[in-house]
Length: 337
Ligand code: SF4
Image 1 (spheres, helix red, strand yellow):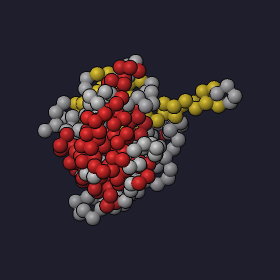
Image 2 (cartoon, rainbow, N blue to C red):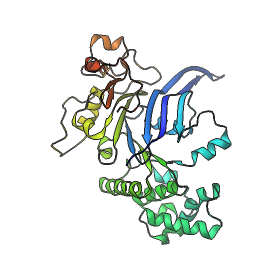
Image 3 (cartoon, helix red, strand yellow):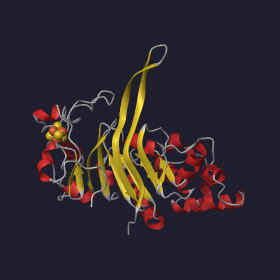
Image 4 (tube, protein in one colour):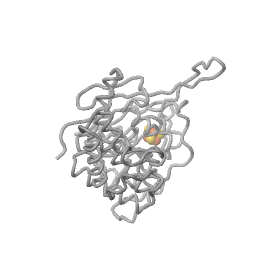
């Protein structure tokens, strides 16, 4: 049973300055995240989906303050994280961990698995002595279904899937309540992807961890995520529970993403209209609807007016095509229902 909100992002804004010249003057901003509101409940999996450059990875990094948001709110277990001084942030960040796409670059090649898995325990003073921490490291390997004799090996001795299991074990070491999975299975073969997704589902069932699954690939989230949020050029364009979104995507961009998903499932509606062309620069997003330069259903007003996020029952969509279907002129972008 899913309980209260664990993570709440409200109108999050993260821009990166563009600097030029010998004096490195700021001449503009890459508007990577531009007013994103999203929440994740304890024990829930939410997928954040979009093409490369849409800002989804920056959302994940912003909530951990690995990059610094310029506005908005990040509340974790009721505590506001933006503005916390470094020492307080370090404490508050412990229950939020991140697993990255490339486990080879995420794991220090000079460290043995034992040291990788006890690093966080040492930092947060978990376990009374080295022997207890090693015992915990052994437990962590068992949790991710790896043999305990791997403790004395180095990352280069493992396959990509095994290294990702070690990355997950490292994240688990400090007993997180939320893990941000940043393209965590994207670099793996399809069969290995399935094994890692199964492992993540088992760990969630055992430990009650919430996941924010950041990915460009809708197909990997279908069986893990309860809800999906679709991002385009720094904004959320659609939010829905997973099955309704796959059965009937509302935003033209979501339809385009789904058209690229290979599926043998007859319940998944096949859409012919794929999204063509490149994503415009987030330093200079189009006026009006940010998607209008690529939208197969764009109307004249779409290049002049920016659509709000309209609420439709338990869903939300940022598109004028759904303006007449709802009663509310605007939606704060939070979970409906
Ligand atoms: Fe397409 Fe217009 Fe809807 Fe934007 S508002 S997604 S351009 S139809």
